[in-house]
Image (cartoon, rainbow, N blue to C red; front, top):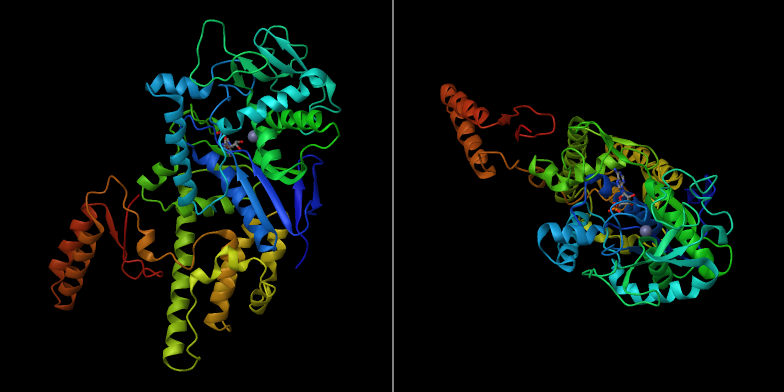
Length: 506
Ligand code: AMP
Ligand code: ZN
């Protein structure tokens, strides 16, 4: 297997992956702030992090992956002014901040599962406040100063502050002079004191008074506690390259008393852009236009894995423009692959029953869980057998998922290979792409839009009646049934090359 190369935002270069701990890969991904639902742009960040984790597992590394849950400290801007997102949402909904966090964390985890994102650790920031206070105490004297509003980090106390963002001066992009008395515009809060006379739902005692930690601190603390510093890879959306991650690095430098940044490789996914929304605003955000949640896609009749495929069709470092047409195209492509695999499975079963092949167990998808793929010395051999080295070459070249997806289609299209060999190869490739190609069925992919006025069972019954009418040469009746289905938004797809009998118009 060729070596894995990844783009490091820190050096702006593609680098060979060399693990800090032999045979292990430790990854930390900045997780969601759980004050609201996640939009599908956020979910792109986790599809990317999951793909990275799967590639590392495929390469045989023992993976430890953390996606933290921010349930305290993130203000309505990335800077130090404004309300705490959690407290604001709690006040608006008349609930406690803790209830808000639990509700949206559960919703987030449900979305992860629907996108077939592997289960990893999800520590919550509020569980690490004590460790954050200890960290602040350790760096306060040399690196911080206290103001009435809190404890602030002095960015001039570390070398090359902002090198990740390529911020030339302290006035780099996105810096806002928002707190009275800060020494540099880019200085940031380590601890925010609760305003005098105000009680917050989430506040703790600290050497700097009662209050809450600054947002950046949690990721320094949790990554060190759970992965040790330095660890291998830190991921996040590209917005984090500008403020959040440079601040994390500064904290890590200060605490470590050395020049390491915490992680060896920093990777950032580009944005999902939505120009279809009301304000054709570009970067998707929760306050703009139609709130594109995964649930909305499902409500409209799309399978969530069509969205995963849509993400994989773009390189993670490129912007991806969302459109309903694009999603529809990804859905059709997914259906095509699933039907291709279904046909292969049927062909394999035929060969077995005709005793042309020994009666080995048919391909069992459970067999190909990541755990079993890990450490499989023969990995790649099967794929090579069907000539698909390009799959690995693509993925190991900074996660070229668009090319990797085409390798699956290519394997499907090979004419002279045994179905079994093709299925094995596709199963292994899919263990990295996570499209569930071996388990999905046509029925799974038929998702009824919530606006549909007819159920799947009713459609199937109508189609059976239509078939019977046609067999009896009662074409008037068969046409009536079809017209009735059309009136209910169901397209009858006679002669569809994929054998798709019907679909509800989206
Ligand atoms: P947040 O909940 O705002 O902290 O964001 C969670 C993750 O989603 C972070 O890694 C962000 O960088 C990322 N993110 C936010 N918006 C987008 C977007 N439109 N496309 C891709 N990633 C995004
Ligand atoms: Zn973070």
